[in-house]
Image (cartoon, rainbow, N blue to C red):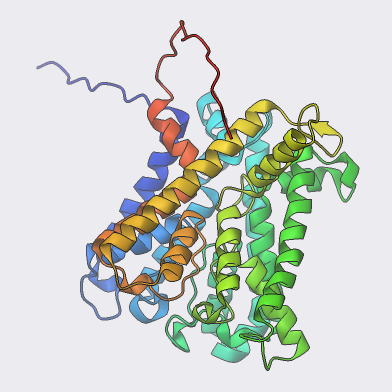
Length: 450
C-alpha cells in the first residue's frame, strides 16, 4: 500500500498571523466550556466561552460573565494565558521557545516576526524578539511587585499576590480583564479610584505596553537622547504624551460637574488621567462609564478608535496612522512639498496605508453599529457606539450593555474584536496577498473630487 501524500499547505505571512489568533481562540473556547472551568460545575455555553476567549485573546476585555464570579481558578488561568499569548502573539512565543531550545529559525519565521511588530528590517529580529519577551517579563513582574503593596493588605498573601500578577499582566497587555468581582461583579477598579499606587502602576503598565516594542528598543539603544530616535519613536512619544495629558484635561472639563463632582483634587486628577489612558485599549475603569456625559462618551470613542501604537499590545488604528493623516492634510492644505514632520519626509506608502486602515476600521464600526441596532432596538445609540468602538479598538470599556446583547449582536462584537486585534488591513491582505497582479492597466481619466 502506497503512502498517502497530503498536499502542502502554503500560507502567506498575514494568513499565518490571522490563523494563529483564531487557533488560540478556538482552543481557549474549548477549555472554558469544561465544567471545572466554571464555579457552578456545569458546562459553560459555547457562545459565552467563545465570546470570553475572543475577548481575552484579542486583549479586549468585554465580558458577558464576571471573571471572578463565573470562572474557577482554572478558567481564570486559561483567560490569563490567552491574554499573555494575545498580547505578545503566538508566533512570538513559539519562536522564543525555539530559541530557548536552540532550534534553527528560518527566514520565513523571521519575516513573520518583522511583520508582527512592524520592524523596519529583518536583521537582528531574533535578538529583538528576545528583548521583547524578557522586557515584558521584567515590566509585568515589576508591576505585580508594586501592586502587592496594596492587594496583599486587602486580600491576604496568596490572593493578594495572585491578584497582583493577574492585574499586572492584564494591564500591560491592555486586556481590561479584572478579578474585582470578589468585591462587586463588573466593578473593575472603581474601589481604587482615589488610590495613588494602584492608579499610577496600572496606568504606567498600560502606557508602556501601548507604546510598542520598536519604541522600547529605540529607547534602550539611544537612552534619553530624543534627537537620535527614529522618526517612528518621536511620533509615538509625542502623540502619546499629547493624548494622555490633553485627554485628561478634556475629560476633567467634561466631568468636573458630573462624575468628578465631590472628589478631592487628587482624586479628580487620578480619575481624569485614568479616563484618558484607559480608553486607548486598556479597558479597566475607576469610574462608572455609564454615568459619563455624552461629551465624555464621544471622547472615549475617539480615544478607543485611535488606540495605542504599532507593534504593541494595544489595538486601534494606532497613533502613527492618525498623525500621518493629520500631517498629510496639513501639507495638502498649505500646498507643501511632501508630508514633513520632525525634519523628515513621509513616504507615500505610509499615507496610503494610514488612509486604508482608518477607512476600513471606521467602516466596519459603522456597519456593526447598524447591524446591532437592527438586531436590538431596545439599546441606546450611545451605548451601541461605545460598545462597537470599544470592540474594534480592543478596548473593553462598556456602559454595561455587553451582557444584554443577543446572539447576533455578540457575533458582530466578536468579529470586531478579532479584526481589531489581528488588524483589519492584515486580515484583508490574507485573502488577496497571493493574487497575481495584471501586467496591463486601464487608461487614466480624471474625475471631480470634493
